Length: 307
Image 1: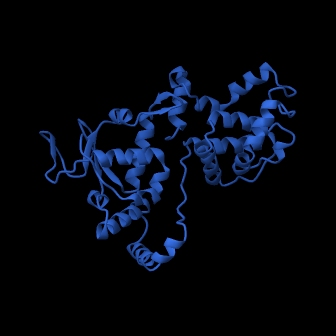
Image 2: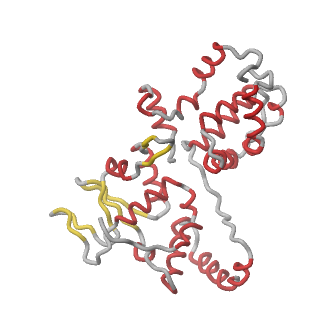
Image 3: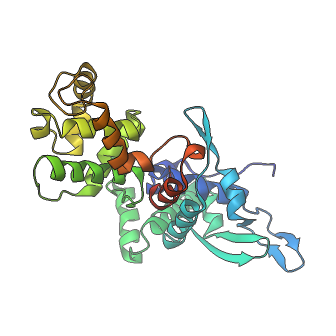
């Protein structure tokens, strides 16, 4: 499909910008949707109206293919299906089935097209409403009036996004956070269950912003909880991220008595093999999908998000 489409830069301040899979899928649907007022006929029994697009889940897999660590990767159909459900729940799209595939309808399609004046205000209001469908009309109207009054103040102060991202329990960041919590409880001491959403956010930063591999994070966690010094100091995802460089240096030098340090006491081949057997996260987050066993692939389908 040729041509182009437009949207507002305000999308970068919207919560959907922080969820990579949701963002990519939504803009794929939005960008490929029919623009013509008269619609497009795909079959005798199917005419796509303005703002609609028809595509199979398998084809969407191909559309969303990406490259990571020089490897071509795709999202699983279950990940894409969950993403579609989230977009429907947030009232960004609705769907219906057809023999040619799923027909996606971008809700309030025209409001995503504007740039200036009232069109831009409509777009902003639509993004806010779709991101928080529980908000009342009065609340949204009040927020818009407040934005107008505080326009000069906002120009002087940096924008802050008060809306917190909610992590699905199948996302890698959440899995990593839970793995840290479980390892601390198992090897160090029982601690009060933390807010795993906050921990997941720190893990996301460690992975996305700092460029750390999830499987490497798992290895460091295993080392930390068995180190006599760090096991009492790394009791949250935040401190794990803050002390990451020191931890890795000591781990690589074997400068501890932890079980899995390179030259540490008790670091045997048997220990390493046991760690690999028992490490759920290692089985879930493995880079070469084609080399996985069938059991590992099933677990990947169950746990990996979208990223």
